[in-house]
Image 1 (cartoon, one colour):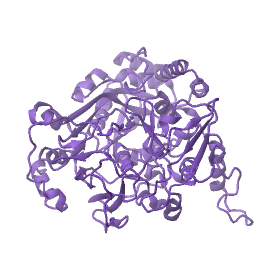
Image 2 (tube, one colour):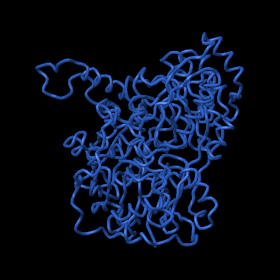
Image 3 (cartoon, one colour):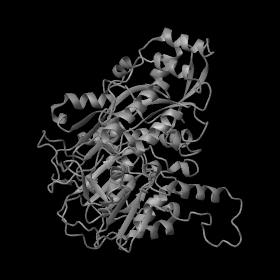
Image 4 (cartoon, one colour):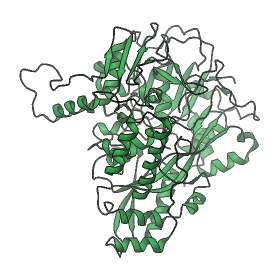
Length: 610
């Protein structure tokens, strides 16, 4: 018999740090004022991705490492003896289901990792509160050449990393160059593919990795030209030039994402892969302690250049706390913020007047789907993929998932500009599905394996619903339950996973980010591929190239709408549901605004008034 969640929460708090125990008996108060914007009026930035605390891709470095519980604590750095002169903001208390896979800015992928990433790293620019951009590490917005090919950034002179080292242009160049080094295992490398010389640099590094032996006369780590990315240049100590292959209307948006957090070159080179667990950035916080399977603590960065902005005094993250227990802890006032609710808790929070005002919902921002590996039979056959789409009743699935979303029309989130509302829909038609299977040469159906993430209740329900829907047309899909990192690790390898559940949240309001990352056949890789369907269509690939070179914004959106239409017709996914993003925010947590982008929660400039 399973333990009652409330009892489990009570027992769990007995082992909490003292700062958490202080609030263990504090009940939620009646709804107070709503979460307010930052007092300085700045933006919470672009905020995306996947409904699981553990979905990330560090496992692509060579298998998914299993994290033992309660290992000896990993101490990042000594806590600063004197705090920076920032208003006291309290300790921000969070809980997660599993350890983050990585806190390296280049490797963060899940919503949780990106939220934590913004505590540790800053970007050159951020999204403005009323649109546009605002400078962060740059002293002003970039100077862009008349032809749109070159962006020049001048860095602030007062920025230091959390280890005290000065930020220089060399760190910025190194940060972006890493996305073209296969050894980085970057989760979002395709974001930066429009930088001139990046692809050539990446191919040279791949050739070096494939070489059996380094030439004897070569002492350097790199020996195949080009040795640098031609489009990235440090012009002196505090000026960076970024040159594009062609003008890219989305690139400045890319620079606002969590992936674009600037890292310390010296620390990455010193730590190697350990940088994923011992990150050094310029952000408001530095890592203080990480006990695998138990807790993660962040302390203020004493060297941060914006001491005038509010922020928490510290961040404490409890690890290995399931969603039901998180909900109990939130209700009792023991957590300040929570991602995701299970169905019973969601309905209870919606009905309870004390809790309603704490619930934040952003509608239809997370396309949830089953990818079909287009390089693995029988999904190489378009007729099979069409049949599976006609087999699933999306309206019924929305009801099964407690109406926490709407039927999915296409690959883009509803919130992203360019979403094509005129896309054709696959009607639920089992007879049509069986006829398509017969036409494809499978009159009796076939057997396959459907991978699904066990810790994501919505994905498991969707997988079970799809399994039963396919059974009714003669397709036997055995569900393989895995963790989110395992799914991403294996599904990103060519010809490995035939089909599986997944979802997406855009990092910023531009169709390129989603479509180019998860559906562009020009970006296919043998491992670590974000295009889990390994979908490739020459016409679509040409449309992507056309969009990259199109300077007219309206025409560019039309090209992406054409891409959406062709993708739906090719059916590399079983299009299921556009899930809502849901978060819980205590009334005493100030400065928080929910957004429909990655990550939905930017908490680094919030503060607490209990």
